[in-house]
Length: 254
Image (cartoon, rainbow, N blue to C red; front, side, top):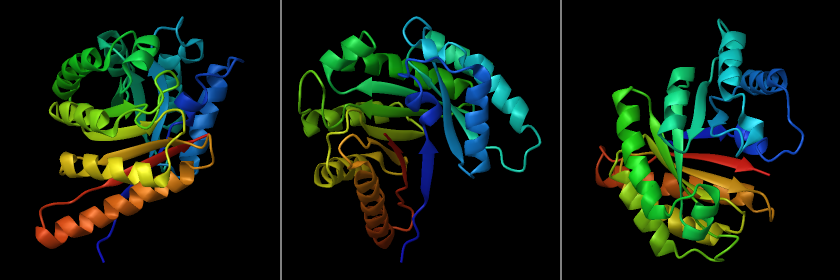
């Protein structure tokens, strides 16, 4: 049986906190990350490097990264620290803060993308190409996530063919990993499997990640479907050529 390489990516310190109305202290965020690290998680998204007026909860991103690194210095287990960036300014801040990886998001829905990031999907892909090149020059892995992959709060169902085209365009820039995010939690295992299969086949050796919300109690099922499908495709690829593998990682948030 082909062994699967599955990684859990904890996104709570960023995605879980960013919409909280009550601002948490920097010390509380550092404590949260430290406890997650103590639980054995290998990759943790600790902050987003965005304008503090847009996301006040993330205004202390640099301080959180610095505090986490100081807290975990010399620890037996030190996870990989991820930072979300949306533009070149954010990337420069993340690199200066010393994160281990950066992530960028392209929203599959133009309406959602314009409201969330001020750009269409095509414009976001242009930014991604620039950031991917800059991160590569800095020797920092850069991952790409296609958000609202199964549904948009403004446009409704997002056509899978369009999501796949965005993913393929993003793959041309050579991400360290590519993800699909069910941003509003409307996807089910069948729809997730169909789209993930297309992306895994297009990604080749680039790892594929699923990011799911448990809005309708399908987050865990969708993550399981992603892991199962990626493992099945990996086994098929290995049977055809020992050089072809596929890897999956998954994140589930409330």
